[in-house]
Image: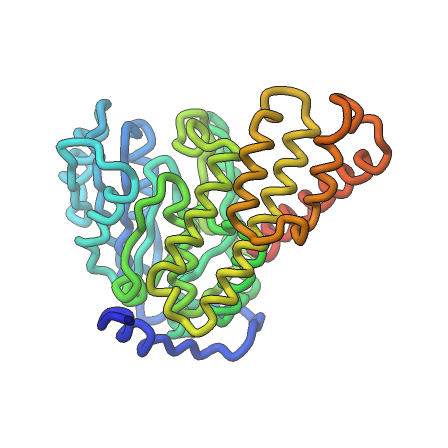
Length: 376
């Protein structure tokens, strides 16, 4: 039975975009938007001032910042409180014990008052003009609940790469079309700091769910089920810091990644999105797409000498749990042929060498496409 909250969410789902379209970017956003930026922080005292400064320096946006310290053992809380003393736009919340990234963000979300919302990890930064550019899209298209753009990745200790600040165009998707594409490819296309959310949509669909690493992916997909989605071309929306101490670097390997993505779709379609008429087809597409992706990962692990081969049987079990007929999954037969051969022989077979070349080229194309169009 559909509960009252689900009924209300479905009733309010009124996307105004009939088809995917690309339009010229409108340079101004009036009136100014109010944006709450929630900054979860755990042991990132050294990065926190930079993240906060990147928000407070935004033009043509009325910002407030909620820093949520997740029981840090370094000076993060003291740094956060000092920043709050210096600027009344900053509020600091603190956990007496570590609660993890999901609860930390959701606690900040509960205090958000802005018309728009950003989740910014304390080790990331917004680029100049990021909020102004995203608000412009929201103002032009009231049905859009999620706007994102290209994030610039950089390594800790490196100078920030130069950011482009002039958008050239916008792509607008009907939310369900964007969701369908994400199900088909089973890949997250949003890092996190480059995304601006309409808070009324977040209030409608709820905050992040308890997933260890892919909580952001599930939230983007859930929002797209009830609002349209936009991408900003020609400008860079955030700087994302890559470093060895980040949660993804420390705890995410290929097996963790695929099981988390599997759980994303399970949670997504067990919730509000599961009540959509299109849900059964979308879920089937997501399972098939993820199964094909897992097979590709398993073949890559098998082709690389080393400990990664031990994960192949586990990855095969993941595929079996996703689809009824594993032989319908592209690449499954090739994986079985590899496993049946003598150790090391797959490295000498021309067909497998060509397959690895094609896989490499396809991967490079996907990265190029993501950088240019925000799609995988």
